[in-house]
Length: 286
Image (cartoon, rainbow, N blue to C red):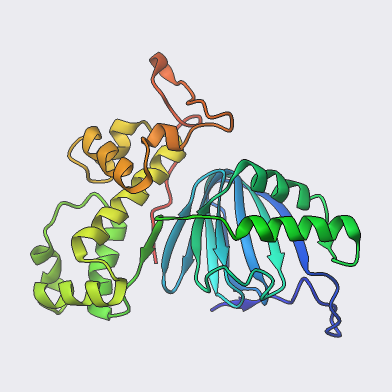
């Protein structure tokens, strides 16, 4: 059941207080914000840590220094992998007209990052105040140019296909072929292949690759080394994982998860490693 939050931009009597508001919060590893919705458009930025957003339509993994756009009235929950510093901006609906009406993960430029952090120093921002109006206008202008990154795992609605999905969500590294996975789902391999393509816009093989990529990303961002992350996510070798990562995201895993200065952190023995000791990973789930 989803909780509908009251507007943060309007007074109880409906009077508009501001066009943008902010909330800053830090969360411990494993914390989950239960399913809820806001009447405002929302931008969730991870200044540190990894967030996993869930809606009825799928899952979005948000690494550190990236953000996710959540349209108004979208029921969602958020789970934390490792300690997370979340910075949230709420927008009056239609203020960011060019952004899609669906959730998506975005890269955040250095300028937009600093604007988000600066805006979070204000509880509310109103266009009637000159300084606050400029901040709002520049942020909205910067959001027009953001690029989406493929960190979404869409879910089918078909109950038979969802049985296959739940099996793989419980163990992304499962090596069973689709025919084996279909034995207990109540549908043939051909039917499930058709359902995945129709309802997720991905064939089953592509969907499974995306699941493994996102799970590997969660492992890396929480401190796991590339070899262990690759094998646990179901890849045959670290090189196979790195190759797929580069194909999807344009660079190697360690460069993608570099620290704020663009330098890869070094772990034991001089090997590139993200974060501190390995933490228990909350698996991608429905």
